[in-house]
Image 1 (cartoon, helix red, strand yellow):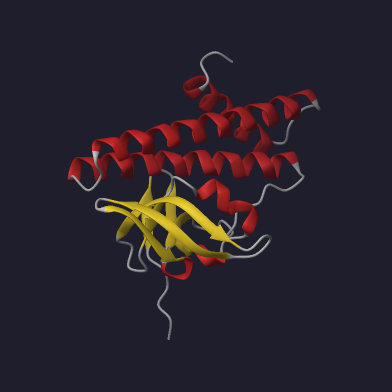
Image 2: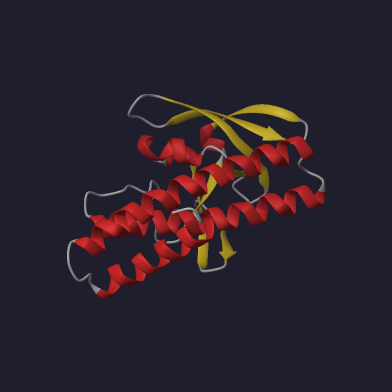
Length: 183
């Protein structure tokens, strides 16, 4: 009988570990720079590269660990996704769904940043790897915040938003204020 994947606390909900080989092809690129975990929830390293069949599932993953780069089967690696989120967050054509997905990804990045700080404090990340990881996290966060702000603007221009859309628009604006001060 298979065990369920562990859940991890976050600032706003819980994260569930999902096998990397079960994540849809379209979402794999967004996971580069994310923390990788074992089935038990132990950190394995940071995802540097993912090898996958085009349109298919991930086959192998290269992890940056405290002792260097390590290549592992994707079926042995888990990534943290929000509970209730699909194994592969897809941005549907509906702007509210797209914005919801982007806001969830921004929240997940907050958790990744905290985990990177913890790993550095524990000594399991070298200063060089830590700075590189923080740089990738910052770049990913800026890109997501720009996309979220763009969708939020379109939603506001299209007429009065629904209550859910208003909450998501405000979240996007808050992330933009923090991470895109020039916008």
